[in-house]
Length: 336
Figure 1 (tube, rainbow, N blue to C red):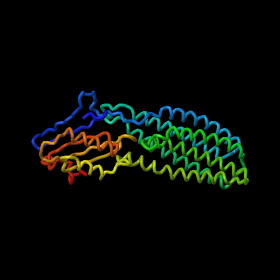
Figure 2: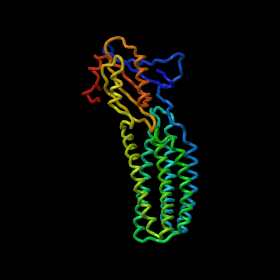
Figure 3: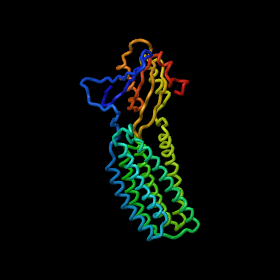
């Protein structure tokens, strides 16, 4: 069925035949459609944000690394290294987003949407490794604090706050709807926080002359970023193993399908993430005896699933009660 540019498939099975009959209903006038389910539900493109963010951060890494080396500031050198890892993170996230837009083929029937989930996972790992390195260097520097130049630190890190905040803002609107974009946003927001800490460290050094404040602030910032990144790592790993996406209540989905007119049972229900912004569902619906209007049933199911759970890729198999008793995937025979 074609509804608002989406397709929903219904497979009707009964106990009188040894074959399945796929029913595809379409509104009039007919619309061209490719039945490989290559739907375009990608979020708004962030190509410009990625390109600008990478360019700005590469330029800032060069500036920060140079001045950090000149004045022997661990905070600036560590922040430069972290910014370099963020450039890699942005490239990774961009690559995952672009790969997710590749069309499916005969060997990759879902396309490469999962690449964005993998990119989010690798981004989290990269950020955790960078913070571990920063923490280690800070601990080493605590054992032998060295003097530095407070005003240079403040000026350079101040530029970093502007660069990283501007880049983070370019990804802000997509952080809630796409885990991959959220990873890019967290990288940039973390960098802005690190730069802010460096500015504070420079100010405290000028005020009190505390040479140990630089590594202590670096440790504190690393801890905050690790805590913020942990959820990204956990969620992306969950999706890589086909976990139910956050925001989808599986019992509520089952109840919604069970409440559809004429439906007496639901089994073989599966919900998973095809990418960081695409959710798919498959289920078997057992119908009561009688002539249900399959088109209306599928229309209502698609509409409710989309409206309540943002599930757009829906495949439903409609079964008679007699066939459901024989179904190898019914509850109690390996089905949930």
